[in-house]
Length: 246
Image 1 (cartoon, rainbow, N blue to C red):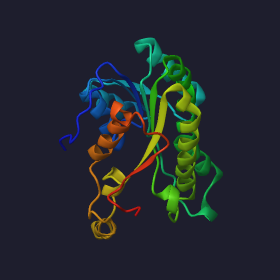
Image 2: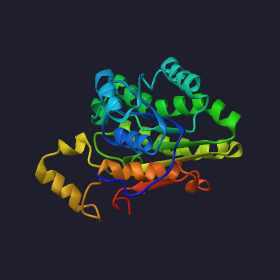
Image 3: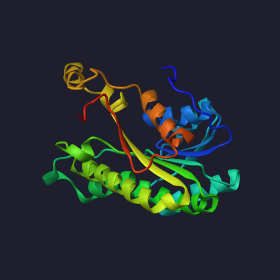
């Protein structure tokens, strides 16, 4: 899908987590085509390296739930570029199960990646943001974090936590010229593609715009929030969902 918006990120240093596929890859691609040096973080080394080669990004294999991995990624970016301009916390996993069957391991894994990864990367980037008195953080949350969904108590809790984290860090970091925002997407991902056609049609019919978005449409929203055009926007959770949250 052709980009519908144009922003200039020439020379910017950008970290995108969960960047090997789907929305994360679209976001990384948008920044790369706008001139940024994009550090693409993912746990899947093989898929990540192929995706990075396609857009001239820098692949960095890491577990976002591991503090040592996160700090190593940030150190690598700073050694290479000397600064961090944009952080996009997109990494996520699913371990769906109704609550009475949900294991400690699956609860901890989902919270650790979605919420823990967002926390760890934001914390690790903050010294650089403070030193340069500027930065952009964009977190990826979900409609499920506000409304819940059967079989996803871990995911819903994590995404609700990302919303609270976004609003709190927006207040904490504003004094340093840093904006912190989130998007709540509703895009055509591999998970959506795996849904049987009949059920997928039912879900699409519940969306006021009548369709799931292309991942590039999520990238447009992230690029806007990272741009100078959004310099006075912080603490916002932007629904990019076709109206499903209305």
